[in-house]
Amino acid sequence: MSDLPVLAVVLALTGALLFAVGSVAQQSAAEGVDENALIGELIRSPRWWAGVVGDVGGYGFQAAALAVGSVLVVQPLIVSTLLFALPLSARFAGTRMTGRTWAAALALAAALVVFLIVGNPTEGAESAPLRHWAVPLLVVLAACVGAVAASAAPRVPAGARALLLGSACGALYGVAVALTKPVVEEFDEGVTAVLTGWEPWALVAAGLTGFYLQQRAFAAGSLSASLPAITIGEPLVASFLGFTVLDERLRVEAGGLVVVLVAVAVMVVTTIALSRGQAGAGAPAVTS
Image (cartoon, rainbow, N blue to C red):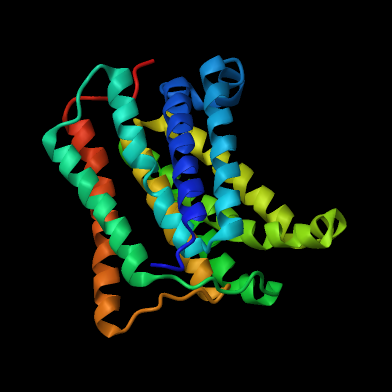
């Protein structure tokens, strides 16, 4: 782990904390709002704007982390957003996290450390031609369209609807994250190079669409229903694009690969268990 960029780790964790604060504030503002008047109601809410500021700050730190570290280093750490969000939501709800919840949180933290130490991800390419992005992006976008369409089906429970919308949001955020690194690198060639490339515009489109779906997910159900899907979907899709497009790799042998896969499985399971455990304790994410 000697070549693991410590600065990237610190920046990513700071971004995760800001994302958590932003999510808690935005969900508390969006919860229960009629979707037909969603945007109009939210833009009049100071709490929602505070959440937006948290998200913008989180993204800034995430972009800075990606400038000094790989997608496969930064994104697993962003998963810790849920670690920060659960205690914050419990605090706002006036409840306490249970021992089982803390145990799951520690298991998630341990899985993150194992992933970074054993996997020791490579940096990969700074950018790639559009033809290399085309098929992976189409796969992700098709999955997003399917999730949004399923959420609109009749008689879909509120929790399932929030989960589906959160999954689509997380996937689009993952696309934005994967595109952030090449966009940051393009700034070395000047603003003109950035504005004339396709990546910045695709990044903005993915980010804004993901943000809209995030607000719909927050309005549809509790934070515990949507945030795990957003938190897990983003790094998984970003890592998928890092593997398939930017040629990032885990430097492990066969035995180490098994450990890494187990760590990833623990990350997924404990992240979902954290949200379910908090909901099961009778604590909504935030009370309005």
